[in-house]
Image (cartoon, rainbow, N blue to C red; front, side, top):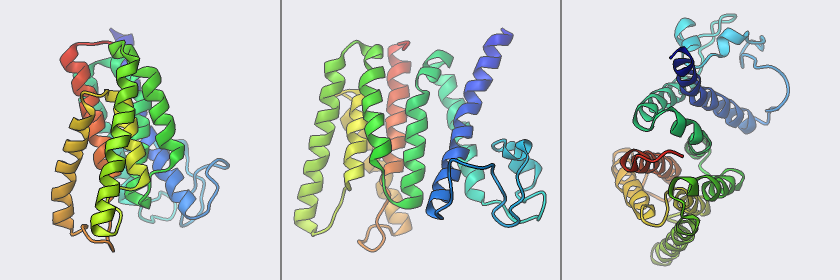
Length: 249
């Protein structure tokens, strides 16, 4: 029992840690800073941060959102990202169980990285979307035993999304779906299969439209980051498939 709870806690902590790391990497990359060398430092006073100050969620609460050395404010986006990842991990762990959650960590990690990257930088890099698609074709068939269905799902999603993007551009003379969105949808198809990929597409659009209307991000000058919506609905669909089928990866 103790081992079981320890394993679940480790799994629960994994995604918030990944969220913290992803946020740091993206922000450092945007500023042209090294992302692979050296210890984490406060952006203001440049003091090296001790290990306890790097614990997701808890360190922000204990430090009350400020650096322990210079009291500079820690960006709230890190806390929000880590908290969101923690809550989603807890909900997912409860729905699909520890073994399935552990096997799904590559999907959860890459989807979160892509969502965060698109929200912060406005693009979805091939370095993340293409490995996600490859992993989907490698891991997902263990759930269904139908590799061809997942391959068809990836191809179908890519073809439909690319066609929508082409038609939209012809009608509006501007991009509606970027190349990264198309590749992410193909990766979604690789994970959820041909039957459910259209669910991902429809739910993504249904979730994005109210957000676009409320925030006013429907113009060419203020494009909508579609990646977070694709990522969220892909994960939700994946978890629903596992829970409804009672399948174990």
